[in-house]
Length: 283
Image (cartoon, rainbow, N blue to C red; front, side, top):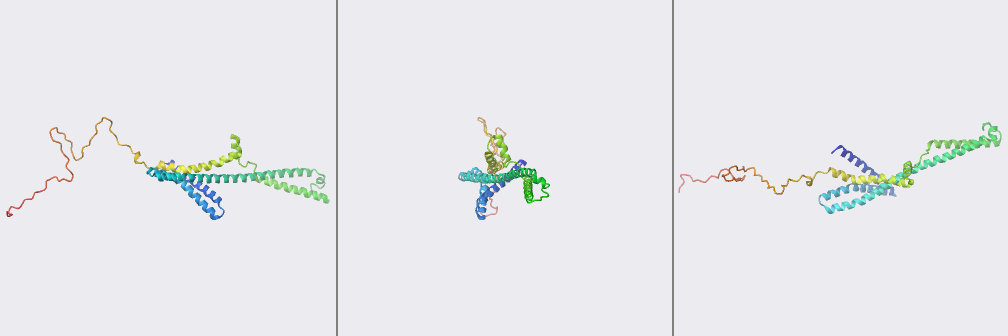
């Protein structure tokens, strides 16, 4: 196994873990109770595991000439892939929408704070030009009831201005989805279309990698079969076949001597002894 194949296996395991997380989160979001959420999450993880292994098992069954089993596994692979794609796209889209919503809410808060700051600043500018403001030494020495009411209004405007300035420091003026805004400007498409494509791309890519990646890696690491072995040399047309003499039979080099025959391995070298009666045996 090479270094590239090791890195490929590690990457595939990471992608598969991500797709299982996508499916589990999507299944969890569909349940009404905790038991329903746990069951749907477990089911989604099991379907994703089958999606990763069914194609490999179908290929193995096809190599073993188990056509029916290979066809069944191949047909079961596609609904598992469709469910995983649906779960992955749903999870990524919901996550992206939630993130975009948070950014949009922050941008709206910043816009409202900016409007409040501009309004209070304009009101304070008008109040500072009023006669009561100069007569009370910038609302530090009010004397009459009318002046005190005027200075209370000025203090309220200053408090609103300070609160709006604090929100401006915490907020942001950026776009809710800067990536969609940039691609929309380049491609001339709406932000909704770009956001849909950006949510679709990572989910589809992860699901396809986890579905077909293991098939490619296992196929590349499979041992050589009999069909991959080099074929024996076949004599060309017109070439006489080459006969190899047995190891026990030496080649006959004489022209007049008869050919030697190979003696079986079980035959004895010497003939069996004959029975001879003793000399003093009665006749």
